[in-house]
Length: 199
Image (tube, rainbow, N blue to C red; front, side, top):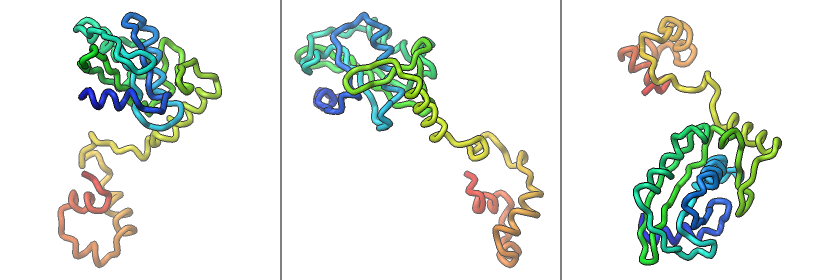
């Protein structure tokens, strides 16, 4: 990320997507923010940014980001305190006024996301614990966005796992007219790929 891109993020006027902080030791604060961004209460599907080393007025604070801080913040993803695990990345951006540690969080499809059992969300510029109604909205959004088991592709399945007889005797004659089926001399795998769009 370039410094120009960093300042574009700082200037984003959608304050539910940005959290600025000069603190480097408040892990609860960081994890609550990441949890809230992952829940994406507004439903924008836009990434959220935790910017460590930036004052509330957008000025760079003069922070020096070292490996220890990078490891500590990156470790949030897999330490098990936020579940389901968030999709996030961390990057150090060096500016003439100091370093900024950028934590980019992708909204989760598997909501509600919880930090130590509590669901955090963004309400404008602040974060808070979700109410029961807000948790219900997140759960319903999750259910609506994830397909049911019978519509999900089973990518590990092989041709031998498919009930070929039923497809050949019942499905294909109903899906394709008899003359076309008779002329089609392709192997069964190619027929199924064409009809069922199997990759």
